[in-house]
Length: 173
Image (cartoon, rainbow, N blue to C red; front, side, top):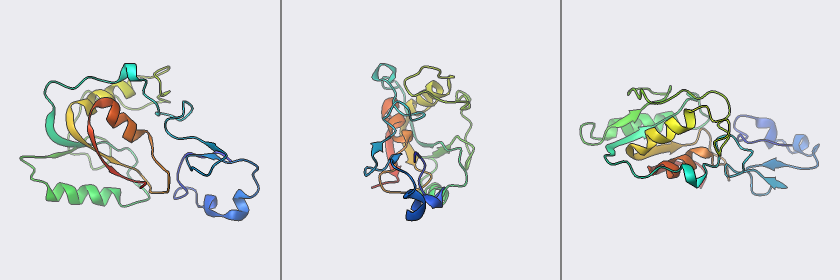
C-alpha cells in the first residue's frame, strides 16, 4: 500500500480491515515499512538540490506570500488565510495570495505547474524555478498544508527554505 496524501482525502486509509490486506506500507507516516517523506527523491516536488537554492534577494518584499492551487482543502486553511488577511495591517504587511486560491495579487513570473517537478530538477518544466524565485522575493510565506495528519509534511516547507523565505507553517506538529 503506497500513498502520499493524508487519509483526509482517502478515508479507507483509516479502515484497519482495508489496510490489513497489504503486506507493506509505503507512506509519509513514520510507522510505515518504507517512509516516503517529501525528502525522498521519488516524491514529486520534494528535494531541491542545494545547488539550486537561491541566494537572498537584494530587496525582499515586506509582505507575506501565500501560494495554493487546491482550493478545497480538508482543513481550515482557507479560513485561516481570510482571518489573517483581515487582521494584518494591509499597508504595512500585506498578504499576497498569488495562486488560484483566494487570489488577490498577480505574480507574472510564476509559471503554472505542469507535470512532475522531479524534485532535483530533472524534467523540471520551469514551474519549480519560478516558484522558488517568487518565494525568494518575500520575507515571509504561508506554508499551509491542505490537510493535517501526523507526520504529513509536503514539499511546501522545503521549497520555502530553498528560496530563503521564512515559513509560517500550519500542518503536522
